[in-house]
Image (tube, rainbow, N blue to C red; front, side, top):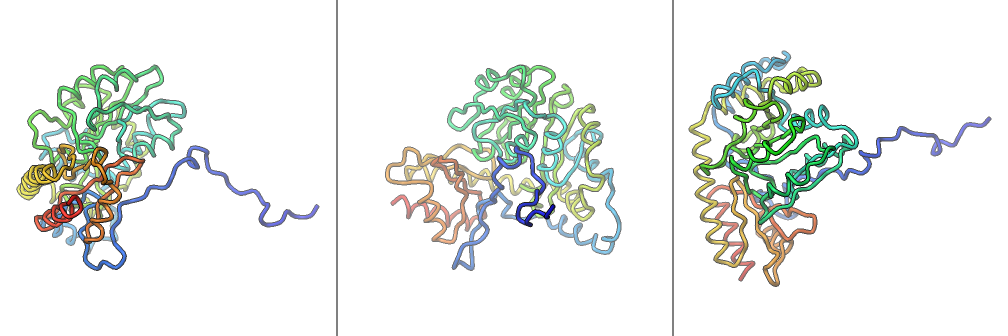
Length: 368
């Protein structure tokens, strides 16, 4: 029997769930013909990391031949001390993305249902689809998740609810009482995952990241990151606060060296420098108020934000669009983030003083 032609030989086939997923597209980081840009597309800290974090990172150069501490003890201890948490309930990883992936791999199977907000963090949908789970979207009111609608969509197939709080890409948040209402309304076997990537930016008194729920219940997990206010995006360090029963499961599948030593050293120094973090938090809150006031005076609908970015809604802005506004900003060397999906919204990160002034000037030009 003659051999099959090379192009007819069978080849490995990926699972259908994978083939149905579109590759992730990150925010732009450059513009053709523009040497100097203002990058406000990825919600990064314009301040960068604490000088202490940079020093700690550089101090590890001579020990790069050694494996990192697989138990992550020193970093877990530092996080626990600053946030007043139980270090034994903390797990660290390659960004909070990896920890979310570990959670989904552990608790979602094909055919299970997961409830997300309509405007949800895109990686949550991706990880759920990889597991073959069905996405159920809770409705929003003024870009804020409706608690009543979310709870009404719980079925006997629901295995997980994941909410970014504050939410990305909307910037809105659910209060402590609303989060507790959700937890109380869920069956005890349904896991509630609260993604607090932007928690450090919140200044509202009725906000709670949810870590107290982890101490009180066995079905709540809170994830956090060093990529945002701590300015360590390139190092990919995240962490989660979990009940003992969930920590035990995640540790079974976590790669033993999923957090490298220079990154952990930088994160330890960063979390201990809370004076630096407070300066960034104050700067961001002050600018959010100024931006909202100035842009509303131009006729723009600014969604109130508790994070380090703001959302502009062009839906009722006659003759204007999110895409045209983005193009105008890019012509001025400013990179925003169109949210996509057909929505007339544009997400912009709060930057340094000069960067924010440039955005306000460019948007004033566009609207006038």
